[in-house]
Image 1 (cartoon, one colour):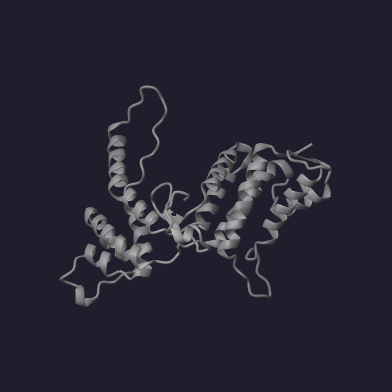
Image 2: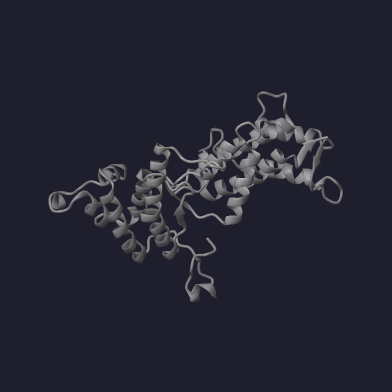
Length: 301
């Protein structure tokens, strides 16, 4: 994200460095990429047309094939959906091989690695260059199978650390929920409701063993009550000058996450769905809370 070139006028101005629209120059650059990739995959263009609900019109029924129609007759505003669909149909990014001395992949694994390598160098790497040069807010997901919103590398590192910490057996499905929350919050078409819900579940999973290990029906709400009713029972790594600020901060973050979920329950009023910005902030809160609880930075005395 920090390596994306920006015009001189923007580097010294106030304009946004990344774009969430589809500039004409990027659209023109993506269309040849789409046609090339669509021609290299048997039946790929037809599947993408169906996935993106792009119907061939009568005028171009015979003189234009599926790959050409997909590349040159898709409206600009749907091009990213087409690219996203293509990425999902391409062979995946090569997985990391076991770090074992003398290890050699089997024949099938070697074939899969070969296809993934070809897919990366011929298709994904050129696409990433187009997205970077076009200064779009979207990038290729780490597994190579979709487009996602760009995230600051620092945030990505914190997320990975929290996921690793959340994989401990006594932290339930914290890591899985955190990954789902991130994926839903930063997808090409974000799902804020799911992202927020998964962020809450991630914190509940990570904090359960610390706050309410004997309550099989514990929720973020009951955990908050436990924190508030027993204020002197918690050790926080960064306790603060009086020894209470750290615990108060954890409580405040959990409370903000809990009360900010507007779509959790229905009532007489119209249910308001969480916005993408709210969901992303919820994920940020969950990343910190999951890591703190899983690492033991918050613990019972």
